[in-house]
Length: 245
Image (cartoon, rainbow, N blue to C red; front, side, top):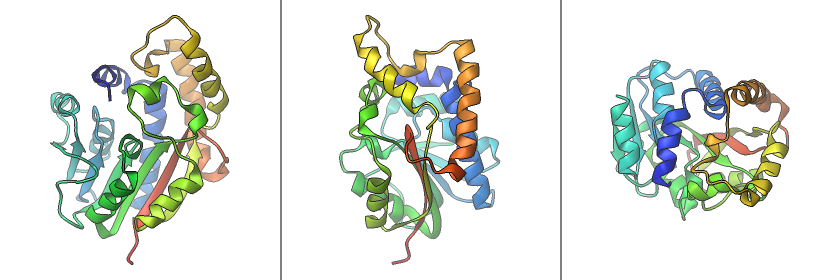
């Protein structure tokens, strides 16, 4: 990602509507797994540590992160979060079958070879392990955030499931989320390039009033997405297990 994106993300991740709703979704998903507090957990693509903070708040003690960026690792160290190793999701510096849970939230879209990244996630999972993945959805939603985050692609549901299956990861559940805001976000991304403004990140497009409103909307979204299974959304979530074959 652009270095400036780390700075913006670090400033807003505690209160911004998107981060707040996303944490709610992840927390509910992880609570359903009923993992012991000593479970070995890896957060891939740690960035400025939002997932590490969530895992810490949930009481997990055996957690580590992985990120290729010195800048991201520095932010996590300054926030006194779990240790973060420097490395590549396509060649992770960990033993086979080391983790009970791998979080790979908004990471595989950053790499050229997402198939290899998924194979690596499977490799480091224990036979009984889980992986929680999220990715951006629908190429038509491509915008500033994709550019500054150096995304390679956005996904459709069937495409993601095929890649997961090929990598030896078995779907437990999967669904689109952030569907209430799909149309407004699509419209905004058509208009933004036409405006005479320079932004380091879409997360800067906010105010206290907008943030309160969108926080309510997005929380309703992530609470209902799992049961409604709307056929579109700004993002996709997949909870998968390591296939025994």
